[in-house]
Length: 132
Image (cartoon, rainbow, N blue to C red; front, top):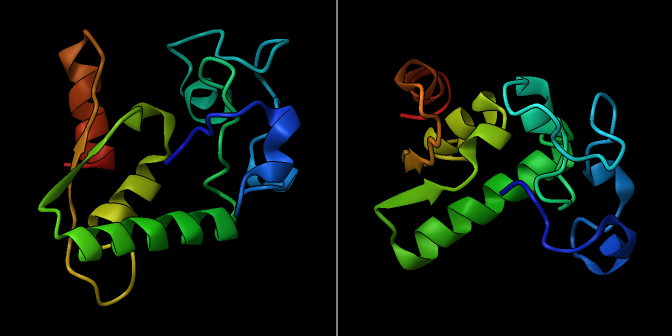
């Protein structure tokens, strides 16, 4: 729900996120647009993880399409919960919206965020702010 497994130079073949405006720019990122400082929340949410293009969750179309996709998969397959890999690379507000059901009048989705921090206080903060 965050990175695309293709280089930014090839996004024209990725549907529906085949336009540059679907991704974050490299403002405040390293020269390669990668995360340079793992303690910088801005970089974690806006820069590329291992060079993978990073979806812009502030783009209303990106956010809507991702939430529609999650909801469709939960409804289709009857999942009781989802694991959110790389949760720290997504805005907590997006994770909350998914957890609340992703779409209006939809039942909640139990979300299990990946919390890789060695610091339990930081993991707890992400879990409480972004997903529970």
